[in-house]
Structure formats: structure tokens, C-alpha cells
Amino acid sequence: MAATSVVVLDRGNNTTCTINLHGATVVSWRVNNQEQLFVSKQAVFDGKKPIRGGIPFVFPQFGPWTFGPQHGFARIVRWSLEKAPERLASGDVEAIFSIMDNDFTRSMWNYPFRLTYRLILREKELHFNIAVYNPSKDLTFSFNMLLHTYFKVPDVRRCQITGLHGCTFIDKTRENTVYQEGRDVVTIGEWTDRIYQNTPQEHIITNVVSGRKMRIQKYNFPDTVIWNPWIDHAKDMGDFGDDEYPNMVCVEAGHVSSPVILLPGTAFEASQILQVM
Ligand code: TA6
Image (cartoon, rainbow, N blue to C red; front, side):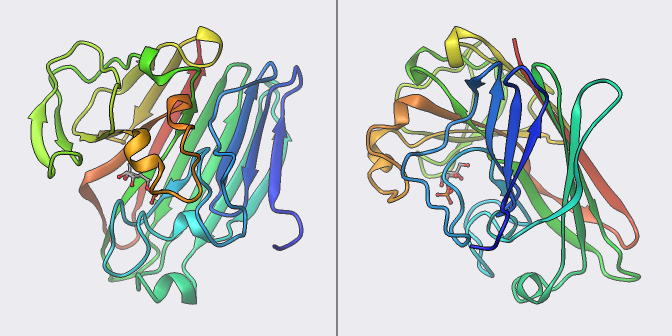
């Protein structure tokens, strides 16, 4: 494992955000010393495998991929620290991470690209600003992107997720059959793996850490993936404890049910704000 692999944004008051350069995976977000993200006790930090928890960055493919690993290469490559943590006039702390095409990425996805990931740590918020640039003169490329956020929760059975009522979803636990969500709030009491399409910009998860609410605001991320492996699939994953599934819920902002098409010389931007309420 190369020298310094983690970058810490420290805002004071025990409010910090820790990023592992392996995948630019946010592996910790503490607000007044309360950890908001779930990372498996069995997570592997070998600089090769995706980190099981935190916020893995899914790009340029969501799900199984013919040309490369599930969920793409961004979560398994080493990112550069474009701009070291800096305290802004507002008291917030900002850092910027980036990757661009190289022999490894071109071996799976033969396109030039530049991806920047700006994180801003605020008092009770974490902001994510993402840009993908296509520097090519003549090549158009398409991709999926998603922030695979693992929220830490005392008991997932007590969580409710708003903002999905009436949305269609692909249910990966039922042969990818498409349904429409009839519930006002979504609860989880079994293996859940759903791609909700064209969802509103805001979701609230109740009963996260210390009974608080987590607000998710997303821009240019039209989809929301909800996942909990439950006991069924907890056992399938070597880097996830069999008894850990009650303590996490993935609510993932993404652009996955249709690809982003990026013309030569143009950029795509998306963002997310997580807020402890
Ligand atoms: O985002 C949900 C999902 O696509 C599930 O299907 C499940 O596979 C999960 O991601 C974890 O994927 P991983 O490749 O990290 O094991």
C-alpha cells in the first residue's frame, strides 16, 4: 500500500471527513464525533478491492460490466489529491480529488476523460461536486455514475425513506421486474435491491445515527438505488459480516437507468448534499 492514502478534512468540533485515495472512497464522516457512515468490520484495505462501506464512487459502469469489474474502475483506482484540504472563509473545509484516463482505464474503456470530485465539509453537511470532462476532439462517450453511500443506522428496520412514492423501480430481487412504489415512505424488512427511476431531488432517511434524520439532496442524479443485502446476501460477501446488515442502508444517488452521453469538448456536472437534521 503506497505512503499516505487517507486525506482528512477537519472542521473542528470533532467534525471530520476522511477519504481514502483508493477509489476516493469517503470512509468516515463524523459530525460532533458521531460517525454517519457504515464501514464493514470486514472491509478490505489492500489497495485493490473496493472498500466495503463509506461512499464508493461508481463510474463509468453501474452493475455487472462486460469489459471490467462490477460498478466500474473508479472505486478501485488510486485518485490524485488535486487540492489539499483548505479552510474556506466560511469555516468550511474543501478538498478536490481527480482521476484521468491511463493505460489501466483505457484497457477497459478506451476514452480520454478527466473526473474531478470536490468535497466540502460544513457544520452538519457534506457537499459533493462532480465534473466529468471529455477532452476529445471527436470521440463521444457514455457512462453511468453513482455515489454508493452506506449510511450507518442503529436498526434498518426502523428507517423510513421519503421521496419514492409513485416512482417506478427495477426490482433486482425479483428478476428485474418493474413496479411502481405505492408507499408514502419506504421501509426495509428483507433483502432489498431496487433502482428507483426519475426520483425527486430530495430524500429523508429517518432513524439514522442517534435517531436523527439524514437529508439527501441530489442534482443531475435522476435515479436512487436502495440496497440492503439482508441475511441472504450478507453471507455471500467475504468482506461483510453476517450480522452487520441491520446496521446499514445504502441510499445511492446516481445516473444509472440511462447513460450520460458526453460529446467531445463538453462536461457533465452532478452534485449531492448530505445533511444531518
Ligand atoms: O447498489 C446496489 C448493488 O448494485 C447491489 O446489486 C449489490 O451488488 C451492491 O451494489 C454491492 O455491489 P458490490 O459490487 O460492492 O458487491
